Amino acid sequence: MLIVQTIAALRQHLAAFHRPAFVPTMGNLHEGHLALVQRACVLGDVTVASLFVNRLQFLPHEDFDTYPRTPQEDYEALEREGCDVVFAPAEAELYPVPQTYKVHPPAALADILEGHFRPGFFVGVSTVLLKLFGIVRPAVAVFGDKDYQQLLVVRQLVAQFALPIDVVGHPTVRSKDGLALSSRNRYLDAAERVEAVQLSQTLRTMAQALRDGAQDVPSLETQATQAMQARGWSVDYLCIRRSADLQEPTPQDLATPIAADRLIVLGAARLGRTRLIDNLLVGELGGCAEAP
Ligand code: PAF
Image: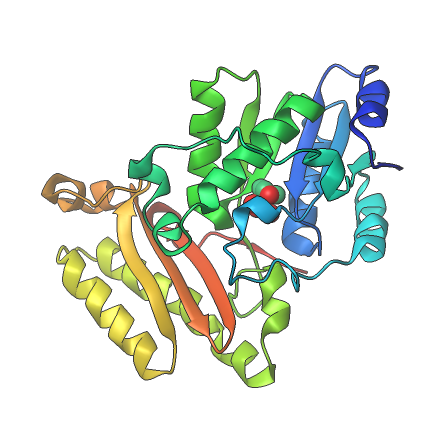
């Protein structure tokens, strides 16, 4: 496996390939990331992963400085998965001058949910991805369904800029108890780790209620929020949305169980100092990849 730090070295190496498959990451890899790499390995003629903690997508009070950075472990894990090339640029390589040109995704998608609670987050994500796409020039890029809103933002970015990239979403990988894998899970202490499963369980309860014909979305959201708050969580949102565009469902979207299958339940909540996010497509109740 080749590890490169510069754009020039990466381009030179990739010139020999026709169909790079790309997995952008911020490192501190877990089984969820590695599942994306495995998927990429069967989609392209060379698999490229990037490791870059992107300052642009962190708010000033967020954990940019303390975000876990574990490059050696990441390289070993990527090599074991069969990754061919790792692009691990220094900040000065990707941002040699202040990044004054930025991508502002549409507010209707990017200023809600995560974008509401983390203003500018999707500007940072879209900007670094447009840049990484220009550097790697992948034919296919693989993203986790866990960051569902990010996946929709990336799909629209690629569509509206007519980038020749297939964006592939991969199912969320979960621990045996249902907790979605995340680099931030390592912030949880032992008691919080046990409690953390409540987020996915709450999403599941909400999704099941929709499947069973419940149509009062505000009361489902309020009940779920109050139940989580009573357990000590600080809830940013527990929401039912349309999976296609993350807008609030109309009465027609809720009219039948088949229509409800096109909904998604999304949550973000803080347990102690750890902010967790997760989501569940109502139509995929019961289906999820499990970490070994
Ligand atoms: O999902 C992530 O890890 C990041 O948002 C990404 C896509 C690597 C951009 O920095």
